[in-house]
Length: 156
Image (cartoon, rainbow, N blue to C red):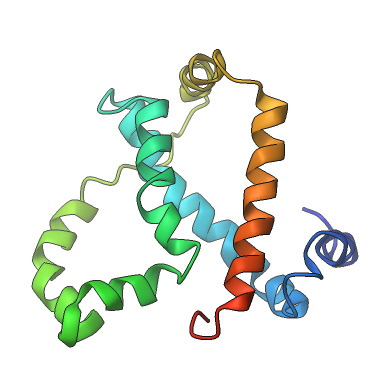
């Protein structure tokens, strides 16, 4: 794991123009890494079980919750989806169903057997793309999103 000073230098160089929350980001970094892992498990499981392809999962996230979460985060979006009842309504309304869905999330693979199939899925998706250009454009879009978000007074 990177040291706090390396992380701080990186964040200062990359994100200072877009956020004043560098120290807060460092404070939640361990949680963020655990959250990423928790979000990754069901996706790995879906691909490993043949329910979806790598491309299916990437597309679903990129055009679904990923777009919304980049603006408000998961909880405010969940609250917004509950209408006048907010998050309380959603959690009460979907509670039983979500408990059932949670049983099917899968577990992180115990062995490294899954790695090759994940890598093949990514390679298949990337065949028609210039990966370095994709990353450059992704980073440009993130900068534009952060700049646009900063200009909106009602978006936290």
